[in-house]
Amino acid sequence: MNILMAASEAVPFCKTGGLADVVGALARILRRMGHRVVLFLPNYKSIEGGPYSLKPIPGRYWIPIGDDLIAASLLHTTWEGVEVYFVANQKYFSRDDLYQDEGKDYPDNDERFIFFSRAVLEGAKLIGFKPDVIHCHDWQVALLPAYLRTLYRTDAYYVGTASLLTIHNIAYQGVFNKDTLFLTGFGWTDFVPERLEYYGGLNFLKAGLVFADLLNTVSPTYAREIQDSPEFGRGLEGVLRKRSADLHGILNGIDVDVWNPEKDTALASRFGIKNSREGKRTNKTALQKEAGLASRPEAPLIGIVSRLDPQKGLDVALQAAPKLLANGAQFAVLGSGDQDQSQAFANMAQRYPSSMFFSSVFDEAWSRRIYAASDLFLMPSRFEPCGLGQMLAMRYGSVPVVTHTGGLVDTVRETPEDGRPQNGFVAPACTLEDVSAAMERALQVFAKPESWRKIIRDAMDSNFSWEQSASRYLEVYQQAASRIKV
Image 1: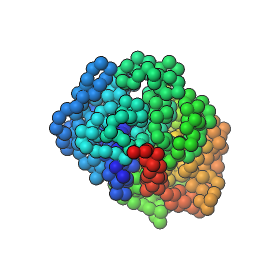
Image 2 (image 1 turned 90 degrees about the vertical axis):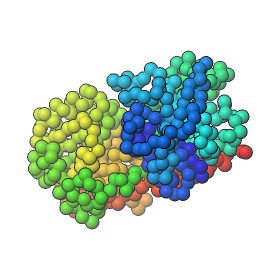
Image 3 (image 1 turned 135 degrees about the vertical axis):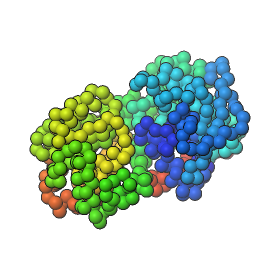
Image 4 (image 1 turned 60 degrees about the horizontal axis):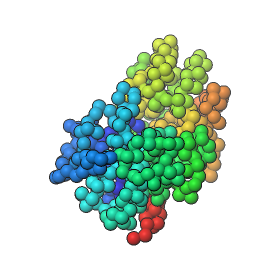
């Protein structure tokens, strides 16, 4: 198939979160499976002068924004067989951050991503790439399906092109006031609740949900949750219920070549399932020394690698920590974001220097060492569309303790089922009582070496490779394409 992917970030070029990991990994695995993949990204300032040799595509092209015509140009590189095009415009993308300035969204994010979405459609024509499907990721490019079915519905170039919109996290929707409609080029006839209008404004994600041929989100459980209640659907649950038959839950994968404890050069000692006992012990000892923790091999080491955000439930982890520390546990925490939580972790690390390590500076090598060294990985999310941390932790033999939500339900089992063994512990909800009880159950098994080694083996043996997920995406692409009548 000819697959066009449009996203606001993708590894290895630009990243603020898990969206980038998913887009980059999926594009690469689809190319390995023999499909032509063209990825469009904004040409952010951080990409300019980076390690990739970008070649300019001759000529500029023009994008209507309100009454203006704004120039766009393309740069190109090839990355592991994926053709990557960067939409360049200094006004919109030559900034220090992708979306924000000093923690606040850029006030023209609506205009920036209107421009990018239309520049993708016009850019594909410029390079002569006719896609079978356009795969759009999150609100930043959710207007693309709406353009295909309205302003571009008579464009012969896109006859036969289907669209898929992936919701990575429905909490982020791209909501702007109604004046934004003028910038989009859509007509007022489209500004009705059944199409674009959203409580008097314009919601980019809703536009995609209405107009995309098919929809998906990043785990089967999250696909159900976002239709069930405002708590999970964030105001779009009604739209999603109307399109329930078109909404698929496809679990994200991880790149098992990149995240491989047998080859990971960031670790003190590489290891696999067969020598996990020795490998975990060596990495734990090394991290305790590096982090300034007491050298206690018998102490349960609890790892946290996370964005500090109310979604992640780490306020509950902070409440549970003093009792765990008093009972001999240690913590290694790597996270940035919410300043109050960051300060609380820093204060606790200062109070318990031999038992708690905390860093607010993200370092991927440190994250790998925490996964490899920790016995338990705590992830008490209030909601979690998919989650990658629990998969990475299991890959490195760190047993996850999670809450019963989203992709955590689809990946972590406390009770063996369908012939699949236990690979972690699950708290019913993100409350101090439930999380503490789940941690207590985990520590009781940790005290039984043989039982604990079995859980580690079964966790490391869990298969979260992208091959499975990519095959499901191909099925959905083909289903979407079959709906388009040429």
